[in-house]
Amino acid sequence: MQPIDEIRVRLDGDVQKLESRVAGKSAAQAPALASGPEEEGPTPARQFEDLKVRYLGKKGEISGLLRAMGTLPAEERPGFGKLVNELRDRAEALFAALQERIQEMEIAGSLAGSKLDPTLPGYRVPLGSLHPMSQVREEIIAFFQGLGFELAVAPEVDNDWYNFEALNIPPDHPSRDMHDTFYVDDKVVLRTHTSNVQVHYMETHPDQPIRIIAPGFVYRVDNDATHSPMFQQVECLVVDKDISFANLKGTLFLWARHMFGAETTMRFRPSYFPFTEPSAEMDVSCYFCKGTGTVPTGTGTVPAGTGCRVCKQTGWIEIGGCGSVDPNVFGKVGWDAEKYTGFAFGFGIDRITMLKYGIPDISYLTRNDNRFLRQF
Ligand code: DAH
Image (tube, rainbow, N blue to C red; front, side, top):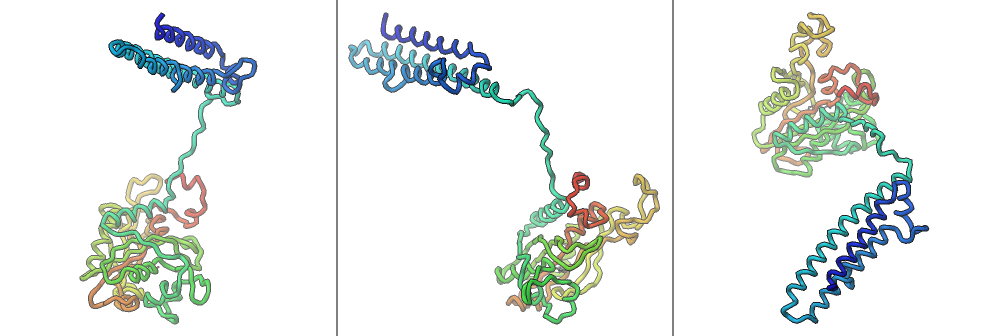
């Protein structure tokens, strides 16, 4: 027999022998096979490696044939080479199939040795969802980013300068009383509003147009059904040449309709904030009673004509403060108030969330009660 044929016959026999050893092992016997020699001699995995090296290794029999080719007369080499290549392909295919078998057996073996029952149904992992306030915050951010606004942040523990002074609120200004501030020391406070972002941003981005949206936590000494000592606001600041109150109204109108529905209307009531002039409170028409103050017909358990709970029968919902940037604020941060104008607003995210979903008590938002949270 030619050496090639001889090797092929031996290879087939060896592979077959190992294959039947693997096939003959029940899953119960397999762990010992897979993990150690014990009475059976080398494991099938070990035997497999040895066999593969013997035939396909660098110094293996098939490589030996290729090396031997050099001793043949030139005209015999191509035919011989072709046969050797065929043999090598055959060996590779046989070993690949055998390796798969051995791996299957090892898996079956490790399962048989453990308490794991792969036929049991799996556990359902409950999927969480975003907190309603986070949903509202993300929705607001996404809307303003869509208009080209940049996301900005500012510290929650901040100097008096950023929270008050630079916003045109000097130390003895009566409007400080509106804020019920948590003082860390004489000069450091827990910010009472997100308006500090205005000062930080203008200081670090001098003399250039600004369009920012800045959500964040704020703190006040306040605690009842509609106030929490820690709550979230979202601040907006736009500064450029020729920015007017009309730009503020247009922007907020787009946002209100996006947030509360296409039929939403809005109104501005004159107000006072030290850092805006003129200042206003923005209200939107109540989405629940469509601005009528009474619940329309056909709303489930609530009879038609009942006074609307969401807007307290006024037909309007207060959203928050806004206005044109006070020139004094530009002066404080070293900007030229002759060159730039701007608008700003600051709204409570907790408040918007409560209104949007008709939540009667702010503490629901922080109780972490799953029966409540699952509804969103
Ligand atoms: N910072 C104010 C507050 O918390 C809200 C506010 C009013 C923010 C007017 C503004 C603004 O940016 O222009 O009560």
